[in-house]
Image (tube, rainbow, N blue to C red):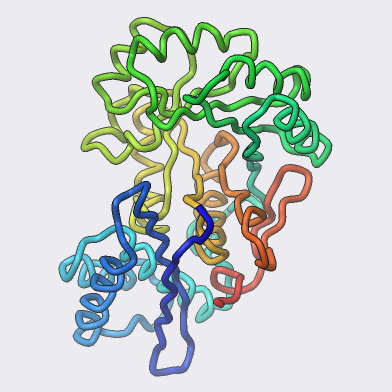
Length: 327
């Protein structure tokens, strides 16, 4: 990828206080185009003409607006933008950060993982050592490529035993391939193996063959996956969950199944990352989460990062609403 298309929206009320949201479809990943999102948002705008404007930050009023938009077009990526903008506006109306509207005791900061982007062992070792020096407690390595066990070993050698190593295959393997690969990863002691195979049926079969900690990501979109209890952890994404509101509901379902929820980015922009941080801070109030994959803004060139990582954590924005400015 060389460019990341996104769509920003503004919801303006009669009192002049507005809220901002972001739709971040990633067509090669989720099959949703920018054009499809814009078409959905136009239907939402038409529906909103007949909906009473929320006067405050009462979540019941937000739900009514979302229901009207969902009836017009249920595309999750577009609904995520509407939902973000509604929460942003509610926070501005109440002069409160969104997380404080979601929870009485939101976390002040969210631990995040570093994503390793190099392909070869020496460069991977350097990146991992740099992440350790910056204070990250977890690094994530893409696997399902060549020399996976050697690359994982190089990362482990660079960071020693203290740092958590998360492996993400994006469903690249068959059950038999995953079983062989996971056995080879044992010396690197992975914290989680994310999406080793795709689909609930395949993951159930893999669990019968291999004793390891698994997370689902893309499989989480499958019907019944959130409550299936087949994984140790579930990766949630705002675009897939239709925004902050949907993400909190999904996290509650995951926890009820006995698994751990955590949030990740699909190369979202500042509004999307801020929204995910607020959601993660609220979810953390009811129990610890694995490191979240939200430290992706630094991957963009020529983007001033309003949400930097410090000592392996991203601080919750303290300004009203989402706490970051729209472009």
